[in-house]
Image (cartoon, rainbow, N blue to C red; front, top):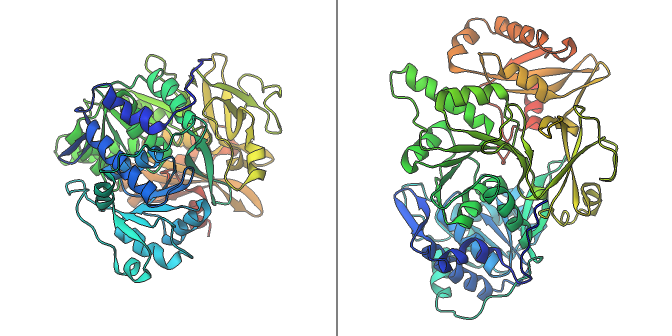
Length: 552
């Protein structure tokens, strides 16, 4: 295993940002947003000044700052400022319902909330009390607008008399303050990443400074080869740790350029961002890879030029399994490369992946050097249990220096998940003789059909190989008291006419497709067609919501 060490006095704002200025990259573009750009020196100036403002507002070391913003440059100022001030970064989705955001503020005991005026106004009726340091407000800017435009509080926040300040004003007030910022230890709390448990209640995986630097070194630099001339764009939004890493922290660690767009990610908005910024790395998800193919089909069918992805040297894929048929279709159409991997909030980021020069189709690649993986029986309660035989399915355990310290306010769940240096992921995998991992779903996603477990991911992969299928989710449904698979399918544009003409015939064809390739008991007893699969705020298919919608 790679041995990566960091000094006792260590801070991620320095590691990712301030060190680039000392290295002489202060003039290099760090962030692009529309036609505007900010250099590393610009970002460092704003982050340091905002950190002073946070301290002046009463932020104490290890207190939480909750950042609830779209993908705008001030998101970066706020993250680096929080770290530099010795605080703990927590991040939320501005599109979440206000009561859910308010519950997180209460849960993490946020001292400062950085958000937009509209989100703050929506939050006010649901807050029992104000964050002690108040609200810091910034513009909800479209990509072609000024993200540092003047803002004011909305009527609900003003009427509540809770403290607030424009982010730009906080930066101006903090600039003259030359006092030393708090010193931090590599094992001080730094960032809490949220994961959803079986109940859907968010849990904060508590991480320290070294966790993120370790993964940056062994995954981003040593495995994926991020470099200073890279330009990055992301489909997942910055509040999601997958994207915060790949589209902010990792490019900053090598002095590259992060490109942001604040609109909701669609095939059209992503294509526009790629055309504008010409990125070399795109943080993607399988669903969007499929949508790009569909969008390209529609453009060509209308007699227009297809998508130009020639600038992209590779796409990253994570968050959900990347089916081999989709991988092949995408590369045949657009070229480049896709590197699929697996990570988690509990480990911060990706610890097993395909990589340059080493891709095995259908797998999630091999372990990242610096981590250890074991596939153990589901009943194993410690990492020293005997692994399952090669090729058999078990629960993945991972060991590495980015493991979280536990879940905030959830000791019971922490004891089940964290075992010293090891983390029990709850993900089902099989490993082949060469060490490549194959995802089989979540342990709590398995369907017991006729007394035999069925992995929905296997059926989904089979259906995705059919030329009519663009996206699919397989869930369980009740059949006279027994559980049977149900497939919820989004068809490709060229199959929509068939769907309109005879949906039953297309459903029967998909069922026969599965019967011909998998054991008969695995075929979906029902096929439901939808326009789109519901997603959670991390961009993954929300199977709990989907089941509620289609199993009524």
